[in-house]
Amino acid sequence: MSALTGLTISQARDGLKRKDFSAREMAEAYIKAVETARPLNAFLVETPERALAMAEKSDARISKGNALPLDGVPVAVKDLFCTEGVETTAASKILEGFVPPYESAVTANLWRAGAVLLGKTNLDEFAMGSSNTTSAYGHVESPWRRRGDNRPLVPGGSSGGSAAAVASRAALAAIGTDTGGSIRQPAGFCGIVGMKPTYGRCSRWGIVAFASSLDQAGPMTRDVRDAAIMLTAMAGHDPRDSTSADLPVPDFEKAVGQSVKGLKIGIPKEYRLDGMPKEIEALWQRGIDWLKDAGASTVEIGLPHTPYALATYYIIAPAEASSNLARYDGVRFGLRVPGESLDEMYENTRAAGFGAEVRRRILIGTYVLSAGYYDAYYLKAQKVRALIARDFDAAFKQCDAILTPTAPSAAFAIGEKMDDPIAMYLNDVFTVPVNLAGLPGISVPAGLSGDGLPLGLQVIGRAFDEEMVLRVGYAIESAAKFEAKPGFIAGQA
Amino acid sequence: MALDKATVARIATLARIKLPEAEREAIAGELSKILSWIEQLNRVPTDGVEPMASVAHMSLPMREDKVTDGDCRDKILQNAPQSAKGFFAVPKVVE
Image 1 (tube, chains in turn brown, cyan):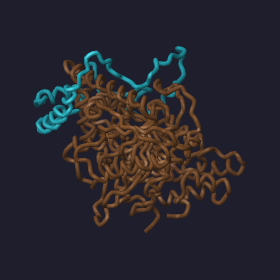
Image 2: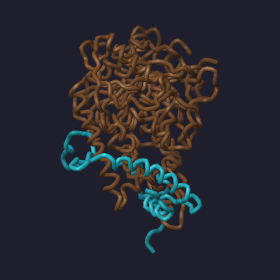
Image 3: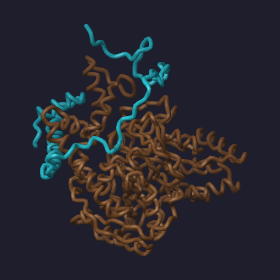
Image 4: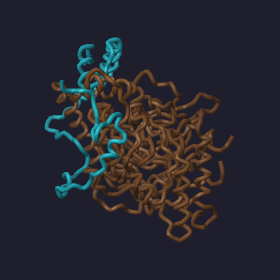
């Protein structure tokens, strides 16, 4: 690890301003880090030339005293964001070779703020997974290992490549997307900060769609302040996404460091699962104590429909996916496998192009939307979703933010939980309800498991109150003083 | 709800995914397991609850009905597996 790849965004920003180093030097250090991180398989595409060209433009602005908020900050982009002129596959064979002729809204915002593209990161195919093992381009390995156990671990998913890149110091920051926990769970597994903003805060335009009523982009960073800096650049109204919120974007960094004194923190009793590991319980309790020490009070709240959130999600998300993924038909982009007729061409293309988990979800989604089953499954799920959202509305009458664990366990080994889709789905038990209700949530690294793996705590806020989420997240971060580093650091032999 | 092979074949046709006969049994088992887990939702009383399609508490925005994008045919076609004379090309569909 060079000194440069050990910095946070805020430290890098200060160093660039003081001319301690240039954006080009920063880019060069990270380009090398990305190369040495190849054993993790975190990147699908590396873009060193583009990084250098962007860094030089940053240097030109910095030298003129016109530095932009993210000038010279090398970021990794989940390969679900379309990037003009750079292959975008969503980790699927069906999009192999697809080079978007346009730039996603969120990445365009990042470049407008001066950020530097390092490359596109690996993910679960079409963001469907919690372990980054469904990618058509191979697993991502976590940079972490259990103490005394050399088996490779999953980085979490679906934004596993982004999480592994930031944790291993192969990117200063990354962006991901979160449909049911795909930013927060891998952030928790890899010991970094991951934030899902309120649905509507960041434009979905140019993001390969999975489940449109749930998908939301967000930052993955070394600390809470960096998440705030990234989100400020990423967010904003975009008329091309009809669900994009037409609200001003605050300077989120201002919320970082504000006192939590007098705040009420809700502790949902339904999140105490039977059989939850004791160390997760203990971590949660430590989080409660930290916030109390900082002057907040806690209140037990009820989110009674929590036990039904996962089943609701596994109707709604596949239903929307089956509709969104209908566009991959071998006609306009990506793979085409010939057939005797047009229909057979569709069927052959989609059979060859989609992996097992994506196929499973499309079939489930097609079934729950099919004639005769729509009311029993899809409509029922939409009603339960309304109840889940109502639970949060009621809870936020009693509290300012909610504290929960991010995931019910630490990272697991590659190959574990692969045979049972439902066991895999349980990873997202604490994160899925937040997507169903459209609320902002952050995962902050808060401690280590008994075998030395990172564990995260999640803070959930009211819709469009990311500032509260960042404020409480920062209080957790300040008290937790999480300084553990993974065994694999890019650039170190 | 247990799905049989015939239902799985029908869904696969609706989804336009070729599913070889040999795989249908296994897929029927997987999907049945997921569906029976999902059926826990039947325990939740939802009479009179309005279904929630989106969390965005807003009406769909309106805009002036005019062209705001376009004139980029070649850019759009550049990713096509097959194109001809400025169009996407597909296998013959009309005899």
